[in-house]
Image 1 (cartoon, helix red, strand yellow):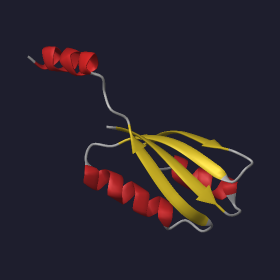
Image 2 (cartoon, rainbow, N blue to C red):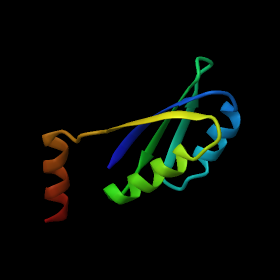
Image 3 (cartoon, rainbow, N blue to C red):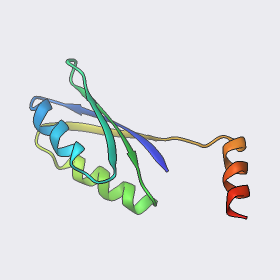
Length: 85
C-alpha cells in the first residue's frame, strides 16, 4: 500500500530527510523550510508501516509523525484482480 508520511521537526532537516530516505520502503522525500518533511513510501503490511513510523519517530528533532494511506480506486482494483486471474 502507498503511504504519505508528514513529519514535523525542530531543526536538523537535512539529517532527518537523509535518515528517512535511506529506508528501503521510501521512494521520495521532500523538505520544506517551514519545518515539515513529506515522504512517500510503499509498504506490504500494517506491521511494516508501524516499523517504518517507529524508525522515523526515534529520529532526533522529530516532533510529530502523521500518515495517510492511499486508497486505490475501484477501477484500479478491478484491473489488478483481472491481471491476477
